[in-house]
Length: 394
Image (cartoon, rainbow, N blue to C red; front, side, top):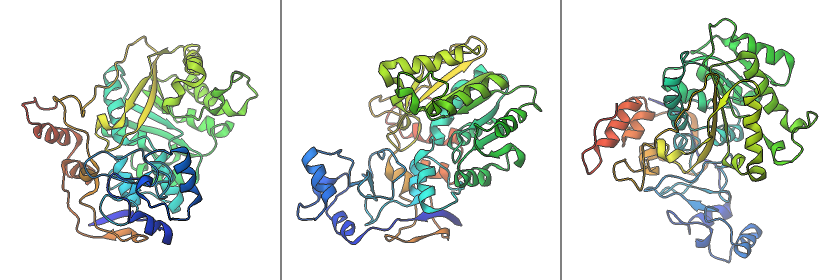
């Protein structure tokens, strides 16, 4: 059996010694003060986040997987029981990518691809929710990254029409994992602000009767400034191009994904202006969904916002939570143990891009990611573990 991207990052000698003092669930507060670290001194003075220099706990979901989950000081990235950082594959599992999904490019690029991704199981919940409200189950994925959004929608039997990404390593990962779903010419590498690239994206929709969804997460840095409406402000160009493509293709619906901060930017004025931009081109925009990934099967505390609009006036409800630590009628969120316990052991700074090994699933979640069961069976197994009688998932 082949396992890909199971490689653990290197620890410096001092980090290695520091990590020995950090227990499962612990953090920088467990590191003795004699270590000569200016960063630690500053954290102690200011009272830094409890996730800094953290070790994961097997019995809880992980904290947010960032683009620097190879670094000890950035978050809780130490393996719960092994003396090392989590591997690239373990980071991918905590993001809910299946084991067959292979990441390409440099190690640093792979960390960024995983850390920036929309968790596929979170995207799956959004896909399942919007599915009854559209006729054409087709998607165009802009700002696609490695492909987390596409993965979730493919799980709900959507058809991929085309995708666009600027960063070549991200694009290589996307292409290698998605070329079987559409023509290679429809996987478009390049800057969406360029006329040629934009036209190729729009042309990819012309050979279809109608596009169901155009989706993407355009950066919105310029929205933090009152003058964002200035057409010469290049910080908003990507968002403007996203709106322009939606207007040209006129899909049944659009989905815009972003970080939760978009809701509070400029005391809520920024998100109002985003909604107005889509309303001007004929879309009815729903109240944004603010979703917590651990409530949808992702073993990770991560929040994301989804803004959805439809050409026809429709009210789309927010996805219903499937997991909860508070609702006894739902299974508890998936834990780190359920996500990675069955993977082969590693030493620090070891592993291979392609590893031949016999590893086995130790949970329903691992069975899902190994391709042994589908999501419906996975959730059914989670429900069966409840201490009370719950009807089967349908």
